[in-house]
Amino acid sequence: MGRFRIRRNTAVAVFVVTLLSLPGPVLAQKDPLEACDAATRARLVFLESRLDAVRPHERWWWEGWMTVFVIGTAFEAVQGATSRDHGAQADEYLGAIESVAGIADLLFDDRVALRGAQASSSMPAQNGEQCAKRLEVAEKELAAAAEQAQDRYGWSEHLINLAVSGGHTAIVAGAFGDRTRGATSFAVNEVVSELQVWTEPSRPIGDWNDYRSTFGEARTASAKREQWQWIAGPTGLGVRYSF
Image (tube, rainbow, N blue to C red; front, side):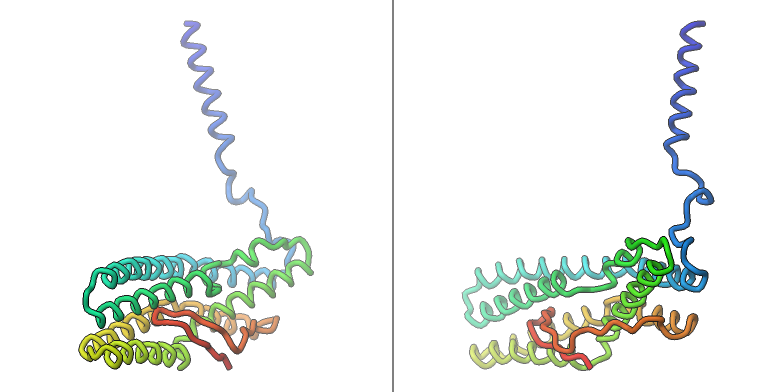
């Protein structure tokens, strides 16, 4: 009987500890935006939820292309090292360099959508001034993410990729006389570079438009990126001018 009572008491204690360790009900949690006025709170909820929603898609895109470029760098470097044909060697080594450029682009280009709402959600919102600052950051983050997604519709990225692909072809076909290989490399480079550009999630564009149509114009000025930027892409390095 004593052993039964001990076991029962132990079971009750474990049950109580387990209950205490569980997260409290949602209704009991403090609203981090309760100090903000209703209009600011509504804007923040919209902005931060949209930024967080696109983040996993941007991460999948980033990791997928990083995998492609890492494998491409290794494969083409090995192919170049083992080939006895000078034209093929040049083609493979150029491809490896371009894959390295793609890796550099992913590592060093500041893609806002990868951060989600971290920049704003980590800020305090305990009074009106803090709420306004948090809203300013959230608006600038979504505006910048939309601007980056909009780059696919400009000419600069596509023109740079075209120029680099043409340079690759000129080296292989012109310097080494392998026109067939040069033409094939041009086609592959263009397909890869355009796929990377067009497969990046474009949702921030629609989210930013939805925000302005729902709440009117942004309370703060949209973030402006530098006009001249050094960029690294899947087919090489270049300069981008935004206007």
